[in-house]
Length: 280
Image (tube, rainbow, N blue to C red; front, side, top):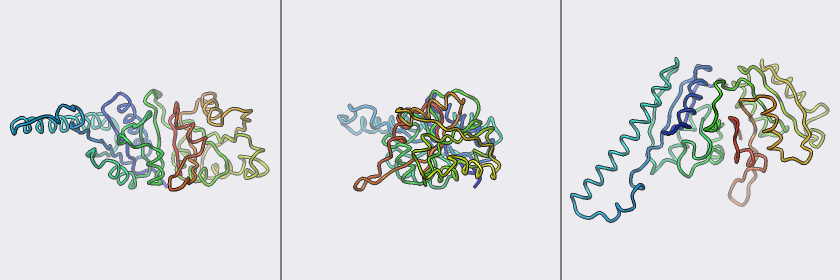
């Protein structure tokens, strides 16, 4: 499936601007429609003293002050988004969500896109209590997390795909295939291959052949963890390889009624230094 509808959660910060530029470049490369979503802040949380305001005139002035703050925040966000999106030949639109119902509305908007782009650290444009992990589990839509400190111009030119022969990793292939087919190089990284019988006789070879049949320029690299955390091995290889995107399937398991991500996924999401696409 091609990438034709992208969502980027924006905010009025330098990281938000960098995230928008990233999303615009990605939309331009894939001829995709870009939707900017802004969680409009509520002025009611800014001044606890407002709770003690008394008198009709004072209350009216307080309401007007907060309404003005919210309107100015939304106006500033759409101005910044349109200025950045207008630099490329992409179709785009802007949507503003009220903070009071932002979790459900953010989920709803995400459901109707091919890829959602957010920032790191959290909330990265998402609602205050939202996380990419929770949104991924709630929607099934892949999330691409761009660290606020990311400054490279390229978008998904050198992709590192963490392959462990799992259902989640296979899902990540389907979600990231449009990016892989346009990348200059894709490295299939297999860690501790002999410890996982699911890889078959030649760990990584079968999936690399599969990707190549789809036009992906793929190579296989095998690494031993040698006691290191798997997440650290992935980060170190990304640095060594000059990767500008990490792709992985986010493993999770149910604990009572809550879904908990596996250790490798949690570790990677705690410290994102390279744009990372997670699928589930």
